[in-house]
Image 1: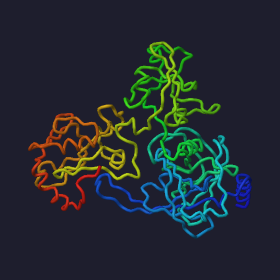
Image 2: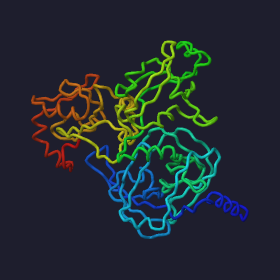
Image 3: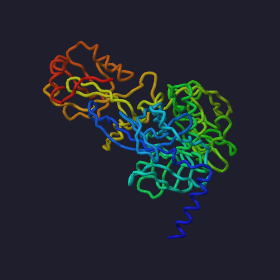
Length: 472
């Protein structure tokens, strides 16, 4: 046991030789209002805590999920029992990052901001600082960098570069810094469930992109190409598309109409490289020597409004195209990524509850909803920007026979297709006939008596304790 303790002390000294960062680690207390996507007029209150670090400009760097849906935030420093009120300055739910401001500047007295470093090396030692469950004081766990590649971020369900470490990461650690040689190499993000010592941190490459983005006072987000591709590892498929042994890339199979790539790329193009960086047949690129990750890496480097050069193979001919990256993922998708800091939209009409289809709803519903889940994989188009569903039916005499309808896709209202939820609501508002017909693509119809819907509206709202019939 003495030998083990001694080795930990030696490791600690080597990791923190440059600077003692403890005084710049903070505990974050958050009160949040959590919306319900199954009963969108309801919400609940949640209290949680996370971690953060003081960086340049008297800002607190933490995870977005630590302060998501917040109504009140307090912060205290390591070694200080006083809590200070704070607020969110900028937040990236995409990359699970947030910057907080403390209202009382005296909070920062005696602190030194921790500097950001670049990507750590494979097998590099790191120390993870934070306030995990199990105690109230600062905790430090240590490990090594075991992997650097693209992974899905649990908070947004988007895929970005991440660093896997074998240091212990537990609830409450989120938002704390991963430190190597006295500098931040990442922000603690999540752990892999049902595993031992597999945790993930947001690398400083992503953090710096976020900080550069907000320098102009607003957050734009991480760019999204809006293209679906297929790997080209099959030799027969490569022959079909005239790819010789020295040519590698991925097949373009679908393009969002909302993306600028739609005007340049074509289906069945082979995407060969990005800004001169070759794409392998498995869809990876070499981003550091002998290390590979998703080709999305070079798209993630770009800020919104910047251009990227695409090398493609079209009908056996090599071409180069410049595409301006003007969209985030939500601009290109029919169903948005996981939503935070927003209240769900809904309309109650005759007891029928309509809402946009959201990933929040799909995530919280484990039943088999094939068509809804397929819609979540589709691109938005010029004619369809948002999917609408009949969420549920609040039983009343106005909707007898339809009480079992739930999570039902709506394709037409009053025989009209609609672009988004706002247009759907407008069609209902403009309807002046007797029976409003709601229809899906299979031709199944629901008829709503307009007069009964109006006459019973307040009765239904009172019966189910709903304050408003609409929120959008």
